[in-house]
Length: 144
Image (cartoon, rainbow, N blue to C red; front, side):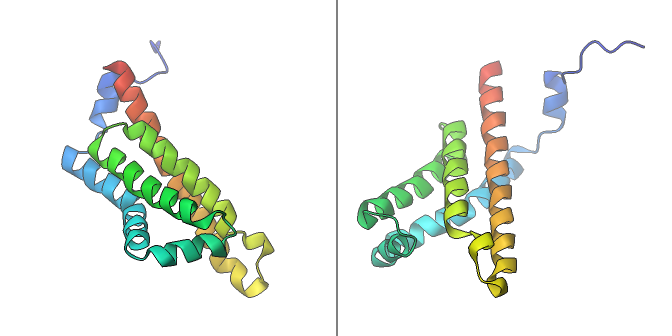
């Protein structure tokens, strides 16, 4: 028996798709921390600036504004489907950078390493999720 191709057909891709409402809920869950984080920072802007200062990001006020805008706009792009691939790539890059900035478990005191390592690898999982969203959206748009 010969296989015609190792690539799945478009019909194979569609067979594994979640119903539209379920896909949107999955995307909402993926973006939830960024929506919550962006809104909390927006509603407590002095706290957002203090967070930037805590991590040594300067100038703190523009960095806080950029972080809020990125978290909210990129999440909205993913949820609305408008530039979904770009929003997903933006949150993947942001999450990867923030993970290496905030979760340096290898430099933490021994009592903090376990929790920080967990957070580090959980955030890497989010990066992977966003990369899959970007890839799927880009591939779907390319076929259309």
